[in-house]
Length: 635
Image (cartoon, rainbow, N blue to C red):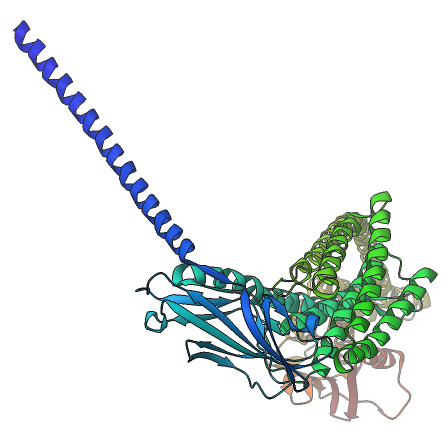
């Protein structure tokens, strides 16, 4: 048993060691394979780089003003440097040898050539761009060129011929050529093309978007000035114009056929570049808050003078063949912007906002890169070099974006504070209003109670009080019969009961009002041997009759019924209530002795007419012996 357990453990140990060894061998094999692939790739790249040749020696035939000179020269060849203010053409022959004819495709890379050109290899035309005889035509010297070379065209001894047409001031010429295997040459071409072509396209799109956004902010962001006039922030205007001018300036890199003939297109580019610098300087002035200073006025005048001079200097340099004039103007503009940039940065370091400092750094970098480009392209021309100012200009757009975001955050914070303050004030006012409403409600209820007391007292005085007064006078006279005194007291009691009933009447319910009168007075009518005929329909409530109007209507009907009981000597009384197109109509018709309706109205009838006017109703009285009609029309 002991031997079996020990043997099993030994087998397990051996199996684990074998698995670990296999894993290590697999890792070693994988690493070795990756190293082999990497070394193989590096070897291929090294071979490709070793086979790549840079052709700098050329035999050139240069023709200027009909005179041709033949010379051996070293590339690059910058036409404007060797033939200042003149146009012409040149043919460059560049021989190169190969140890053996290649099998794989090769490529030819030309960082810059033009303005129009033809490329030949061993007598075969490889590529042609533009018309060699049409001066100031299309310009193909803006981006690098690549030509694929078929192995069938290559020999042990080869000759590349490049024929160019060069215009005045358009950076014509020929850079050093690179020939070799396609992988290495095309990679170098792509790097340069992305830097000059794709990079320019990205800068154009960025500047266009920023410029349009800045102008939209300038149009929409308004505020009244001290005089009440609408004022727009010039900071956004100058930034938007600068970015749009820069978009147009950078577009020259990608436009081979300009819409305006040369040299006017070149002059336009000079003016556009100057306008970009001027607007950026004015943008910086607004960022620093110096727009209203007297010195800013003189600075703007100086920049305006430089812009006016740019047109003449560009026309003189490009059209008159004096490139020094344009160099001088660029130098003055660069010195102006450099001096302003140093002052702007100095003020930013002393005491300024963060936005001022951000823009100051962007301005300083752009001025330095601009001076570098001035030296490279104007003072000591380097033919195949790329501009750096084109890409550093993006910093201004980023600075503007920072300013917009900072202002938005500040405005948002102010809005939040304002909303918080407003909310606190509204809450305080709500508390005050609630307290005011509570007090008003108490006062309103007190006024309602007072008005109700006043109404009850008035009704008691006009109704019950007047009847009691009549009873007192009858008793004092000593001539009244017991029956008459009883009638007066009954009227007093009925009036008191009706005054109490009117407190519970629904507003506008005329049917309920008449029913209540019937309930109170029908026993008295029966006791007086008066037959009551009821012709009351179920009426819709009259919404405009409130509690006060209902009391007025009740007194009118009660007064009419009292007259029937006391004076008419009638045996039949008919009460009607119907809905008509004109409104609700009430009619009380009796067959009594009647009265003279043309005579002056007595106190009771006059009171009825006044109450009808008070509620906007129409009271009509018609009386003849045997029939009296009292009609109330409520429109």
